[in-house]
Amino acid sequence: MPTIQERKQLVKNNIPLILKKINGILNGQHLDDITPILARIDRTGHLPHWFNTLNAEGRLPNLDGKTVGSVIEKLLVCVLEKFVFNSSIQLSVNPARGVDIPELELGVKSPSTNYCTSEPYFSAYERLLGNEYDAIVLLTNYQEAKSRSPFCLQILQIKYLSGTEIADTKLCGLAKSIREQYPDEFFQKKIVRFLSYVNQSDWEANCILKLIDSVLIHHNSISKEINRHERDFQRKNVAYARSGKPLLPEDSLERIHSIVEIAPPEHGIVSAAENWVILTQKDNGRYPNDNEWHRFLISPLNGKIGMSFALQWRYNFGVLFNAEENVE
Image: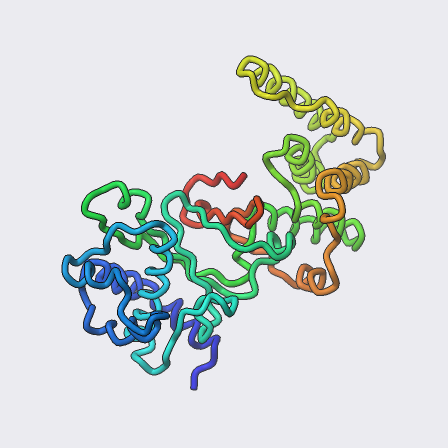
């Protein structure tokens, strides 16, 4: 009996085959091969409602985005069971257990070409540490297909991500550099907390984030960097005033200015990061617990996506598929 890791490796080795077979099914091919599996894994115990159109017309009916995600999961399970594992194991779709394909301990993500999906939020530190399970990510053409007639869904690309890769690529890079350059544990924890909670669309938070990169990691002059951010603050407020948008608060600029009053510079930046978390997150902005900290210390910090937070995690797979990333 192959191990979970051996099964996962088989999935990784067969990505081109998986892409070919799923797209064939979406064009009405191989339906006899998957019909028994599809009926077994559907919660009704019967073929799903969209199968009749697929069988008769070689395409899916025009479905909403959520239903398309469910369809992709089921077709993926059929392809894996029939064509990758040659029916040697029975697979299921069971997201209620916390992982979409439990027999492989494998999640399934199916973003379209807006590259974004929403996922349940459990801990801010997932942003750096990633997910408990690996995932297979199937990029669809749903955004284009839904506005055309007939509706012709296809998978454009497939990527396999390990659990630690389902994390923010930019923030992981910063955290890894901090871990390598600053051995003090409490210093690291303050920065890691900020990186986990940071809202990059917040002007003050984004300034602190850039100071972490430019001063703490690349050791540039803090005075020059803060002067640059002050000019950015003034430019933005002039533009906002012209367009009638709310101005950036002066308090934010004052807090950025106050960083240079603390020596050495790294202490001022860490203090600003800590104050931002306290100010914006209140009691929710906790430090990592023992388990999260241990995972951080041993993690490869190799995130490959963008992650931002708005009630749920917003995963952005644009960077994974070499598209322009805009996560906040």
